[in-house]
Length: 376
Image 1 (tube, rainbow, N blue to C red):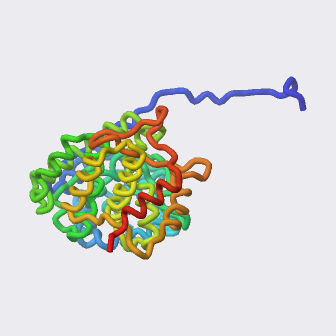
Image 2 (image 1 turned 60 degrees about the horizontal axis):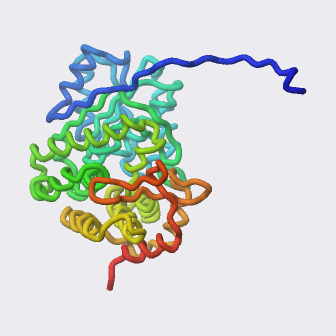
């Protein structure tokens, strides 16, 4: 058939939309959440999605508060841990929701850490072709990073977060009181994303994190409120400029290219923040080797990670070649080649021809990987 014989019709979908949403930061917010949903409901029915660790700590309490306010609510629980962040877990949870007759007039409350927020957000994006959801992060890493910006995803056998969708929440409630029940290792791990924010965007924030090291480690409430507010401001400013990760938002992936690979290769024995900490040292050394990141800045990054008791060395049982192989399936990769977000100095990232990530030769990556191993 020639072009002259083709008939063309257009489906016009032009229009404006607003995905803005509020962030509430404070202590003991669960009653406030219930009061907001009672006076300004976003759905006729709510599904609390949480894991087996958070359920006894906060899930049962939120469920009781919701039901006491005569808000129709049910809770759906999955086994805690990164290994649950899969399509199988999501399908099981959504199947349970369908069995209990949840429909398009329902909404999801994502109660938990980064795994819960990512999964619940992804489910909200696809369940009945999309329903609203609210983020209620209970870990440092979720409050600092993953609950803000609408990036939702699950893992596959080929890597972390390879299947997902952009789905902005209706609102985010950051209750710093929930950090009191975090195990020390999980709390410290979560601070890696906070330190990352200082390195990629705000040198003053980085300076504060160095100065208030003890108050933050000891979970001083005022320190926690301060870092929560600044994490939200930094993440919010980046997301506002680049909601769908076409440019600037890639700086938020600093340390994640090799970090995700190391996390997966550890069998998820390393926590996400621990792997990102190691990944930042790899990326920082790559940038230093390429002449972008001064030695003084690299040393400052190393010292703050050590001061916060975060790991800075690649485990001996994880090989360079396995790391490089997995980075080729990273979301920033193009044409099967990994790309890296690289710092220029503390508080500023490199821009490569209007791009915020660049290809790096394998030999340079190997040298940085070798340097990020514990010297005997």
